Image (cartoon, rainbow, N blue to C red; front, top):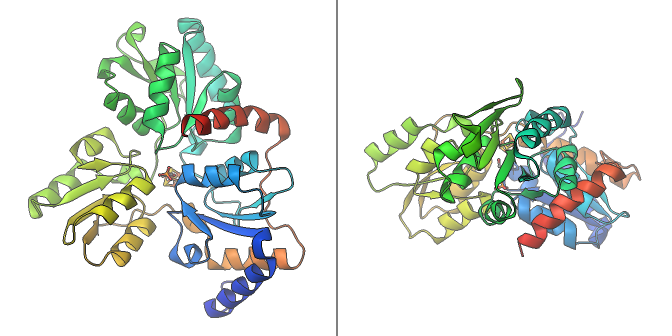
Length: 352
Ligand code: 13P
Ligand code: SF4
């Protein structure tokens, strides 16, 4: 019935319920959320900022988390025990996070430690399940987000000679190359087949998991080339989840927050094509009319999982809370949360 109801009624109700809860309730939204959801956000951010908010805000007893499942799990791990993290649609997952599971990781770790002994450190992108973060935390590894990846990978490579990076091969490759790691020092772990792809495994510094983002893989080198040919003065900016041939051809590579800052600071009249999720690019297009913002891929590149959170799901969640129900609370079991927190705390410490 929520899809049959007039949006104006839902907007009115959400506002009223939110006001009634006051500072006991907070709505946070990732930059990829729809405008209709972002409109209610007390805070908006990239995955690092949302993790920092969860770690530092202990006032709100209910945090309505408009983002995807791994982000809500991270928030649950970092918030206090008396705070509930509520995901308006529990089906809002992340296809990349689903590309690594603990069974596969255990197999990979057995193989890698048999070859490299104790001289390997695991590093996981936050776009991974709490169970993966727990494995990494237990082995002395660390989590990263796209905005702190370079500094933390640099730190990790100082701790150990070899590094296992999961689950996003593109982010891992882009950061490794930017740190001066040579292509033949980077190998690829095929998780399905449990084998390592490398000319000479002894040379490897970084072993990448073979995951990827289904949204960012849709930005191709030919999109960059076509726009450069049409508009020689264009600036092309992309998220580091794009393949290396795309990031190498771009003018700037950065997290969602860094992409927003780039557009904010660009001189009036600059033509900028952006390679990331549609909702964010569309919002930048609308909010920066003095700049010529456009989509890098002219066909829709939307994160359908982020888009599962919409006005009807938010209205349903708020109605549940107003009725004294819990909504979809995301809870990580204490044992997993304990170890995952080690990886996340290390990340937050290194991001200060
Ligand atoms: P950010 O770290 O830039 O928020 O990106 C998260 C994400 O899921 C991008 O696809
Ligand atoms: Fe996951 Fe990609 Fe969506 Fe980000 S854009 S949440 S990495 S599927």
